[in-house]
Length: 286
Image (tube, rainbow, N blue to C red; front, side, top):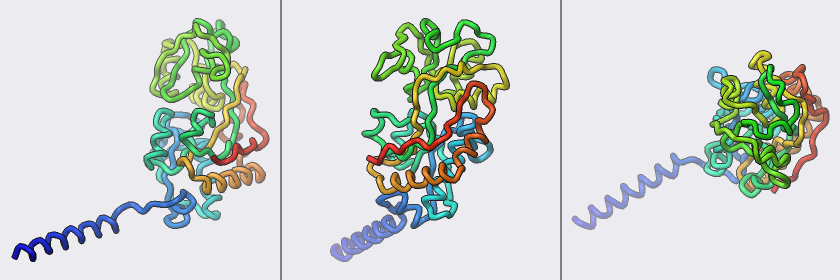
């Protein structure tokens, strides 16, 4: 009797394991393989950056969103995949890729040496340049060097403030007297600037252009860029297969004029902003 009961327990346990195996998530060696098999992908973007990634209704809209759709269609053989959009703030991008929350990230994600050990980057697909945005009536800041002793925003997960406060090689201007004010993201930075809790927001010119456009003339961009920010496409570390496919897609989108059309669509006419005209060279997949 005991043996029969024990056998029954093992049988039930084996059955349960079999259900779990069948019902569990399938694993893939690359995003390219997943797309080919399932036609589904989870994409991380910003949801709080006008003209780049801003949530409207159930999904985000903006330049990064349109680039994501175009690149994924290319690497999916010309077929639009089913996309699930996931908000990916600067502070959680690496974690989301590592733990599988997202498959790929298009989110003003600058390629840096510090990030390369954690992320495989495709691209860059465009090069932005760090600049400074101030209130329209502020005449005390006319160039980046005027940020000495001024209050600048420190958005969580972003390295932009370091370009101001630290000297090379990690920084740029070495203005150690600039005072940093913490914020969860750049949307909060802009709110603080509106409320006079900051003197300036300094980050990529494309990000600033989106906020300036949304604010309807309350802010101005200095138009004095001082860095190159290579926007990369974030993939789980080691996914070289998808990275190589992404780079082919990005080149094609520049060659056929799609990238220029998207830049003009979202940023054309912004005062003080010079848009990229040619494809940036690929970094190589690692």
